Length: 172
Figure 1 (cartoon, helix red, strand yellow):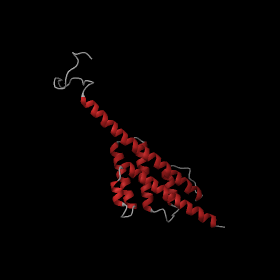
Figure 2 (tube, helix red, strand yellow):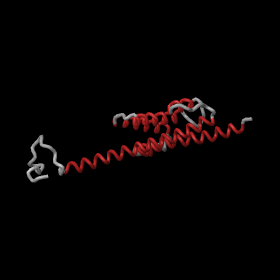
Figure 3 (tube, one colour):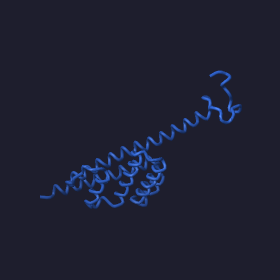
Figure 4 (cartoon, one colour):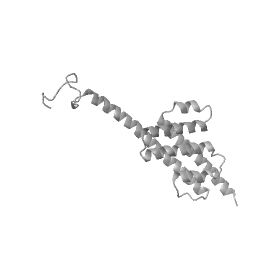
């Protein structure tokens, strides 16, 4: 850059091209990277959690001898109709809200939609939680919330699957 092309912010007129040494660029760059990092953490949490929940559903449907070669939402519908006492309506609501979040991310919805899906997931998890668990859930970051929602539902499904498997072994 030549001396003639280099001007300070004070000397720059509105409408002039931004200079590479504009100090605002570095600040904005840091903010964009932080926002991207936060978003990436949410994506990773959603994908890992969704995968764990889907594997748990697959095992449940296999043990229940139900057809399970279908999309995630279809697996939820089939599993829900098993009416297992450990798998409550509130648990299914959390899993459905998690799936809606996953779909919003996977289909490239706007950040506002994703933020709303996270809020929906938080509401569903709060409705499923005991009163003593609610303050902890309310204080969770989005990533903590997403992980908790998927891994807690998956854990309950795994235990329900173990119980169903034990019942199946007792049958003649």
